[in-house]
Structures are given as structure tokens and as C-alpha cells.
Length: 342
Image (cartoon, rainbow, N blue to C red; front, side, top):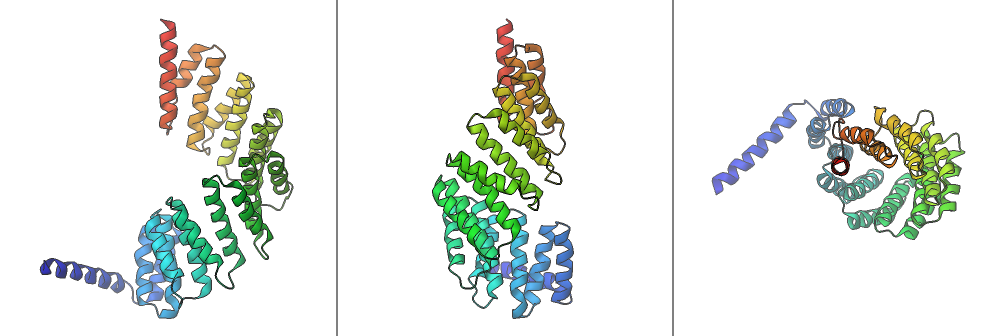
């Protein structure tokens, strides 16, 4: 037993010596780590930042440990990331700004791993800190709101998001993203007019980031769709797809929902046109490509064009990536059509 323990300790010591010996000093380790991190090689960047952390003087350690946390977070190793960020946040010897940033990232790590209560707990602790940066405070309120939405406590989420909008010296991007998301939460709470009004505030601001303008068009569209105002909703989704310089995948998402709205109105040729656009769009989300291909089959089926329906359904599993539920639905639809032919 003792031999095994000694062997384990020896291996750890060798690993430490190897990681530290690879670099002459912490500056060299940091330079290598930064290059790897910028190349999105987070797994390789982690040991380099760890070496810098171990060799650096106390006053420089916080920044390197923070980057170790980011390397883990970007690899979606959320449990390890939360642990690393929490160590930083709880270290009172570290600079307050670094601690607050780490606290927010610990909360985000908990949120992404499904630990909502832990997320809220950490974010409340961050908000209790003195002299917190407004953008860190905004981020803490935002994540608490996300957790409230998960619990379907929409009124609490709205309160948190409104608090963000009242914070002084918050970045414009943060304000725009918060306002756009608030439009969504109003919709969840069935406050459709308020949702559209809030979304329009972002839409009409030409200085707002293109992504938030496109998302706001989509969110207003969903609120109109919920009220069965399909023609108006379609116009919003069309404008959301056309926002210049927005994330390219948004166009495919908008085309999918335009197709859904036309299909609901039994305008099958128009619906098929937009579903096909979504399927052909190489930048579209694979999920919406898959759902669109399934709905092309559903449109032909509803329009009693059964041969075309079977052909469209058969293409679902042949896509580069298909959602299992869509493949299952397509196969079941083909079986029903073939059974009806007999």
C-alpha cells in the first residue's frame, strides 16, 4: 500500500517538474499558453497556464489561475471550471476585480452543468461584494434570471432583468442583450404587447449589435405567433433574417419559423419554399435543417401529394446531421403512407 502511495506521489512530482521545466520562467509559459488559447487549443493551453501559475510570484497568480478556469470552461468541463473559479473567488488575497469575475464564471459553470441552486447562491455572493464592477453585477443578475426562467418564475426573472437595465455604467451590449432577452421573458409570462414593445426598442436602435436586433425581430415574431397574428409574425421573421452582419445561422432559424407559420395557415407551397431555404442554408443550425426537411414532408402529406411526401421524409435521415426524433417521425410517416397504399 505504501509503495503504491509513494509511486503516485512520485508520478505527480515528475509531472510538476516536467510542466515547469518545459519553460524557463512564467513569462515564457504565459506566452506559449496565450498562443494556444488564441488558437482555441484549450486542452493544451491549460498545462501551460498551470506552469505559469506555479512559477509566478503571488501577485501574478490570480490571472493565470483565472485562465486555467477559462480553459476548463471552454472544454465544457464545467464541474472542474466551477471548482477553479470558486477557489479564486474565495481567495481574499486576490484582487477584487479578478475575484468578482471568477465568481461570475463559477456561477455560469454551475448553470451550464444544471446546478441552478448553486448558480444562484454564488451569484448572490458576488452581488453582496463591495465595489463590484457594473458589468459583473449585470452578469450575476442575468444568470439569476436564467435560473428563474428555468423554474418558470417569470415575474422574478423580469425583476432581475429590469435591475440590470437600471445599473449605472453598464456596457451597451449588455443593456441590449438584456432588453432583447427581457422581450422573451415577457412572452413566457404571456405579456405579448410588452414583449413586442421591448423588442422594438432594440430593433429601432441602429447602434444595437446586429445579433440583438435579429434576435429581437425573432422574439417579437414569436409573441405575434403566440397571438396567432401570423402575417405580422412572418414580416418580423423576414426582417430578422435580413439584418446585415448578424450571426449567419439566424437566417436559417427565421426561414424555419416562416415556414411553420405558412404551414399553420395551410399555405403549403410558400411553407415548402422557406423550409427548403433552411435545409439548403449551410450556415443554418443542423436542428432547424432537420426539422425543416421533416416539415417539407408534412406539407406535401397535408397537401395530399403523397409520393413527394415519402420522398421528402426519406431525405431526413440522409442529411449530414439529423435529430433522432425527426428521423423517427419521418419513418413513422412513411410507414403510414405505405400502409394506406395497400
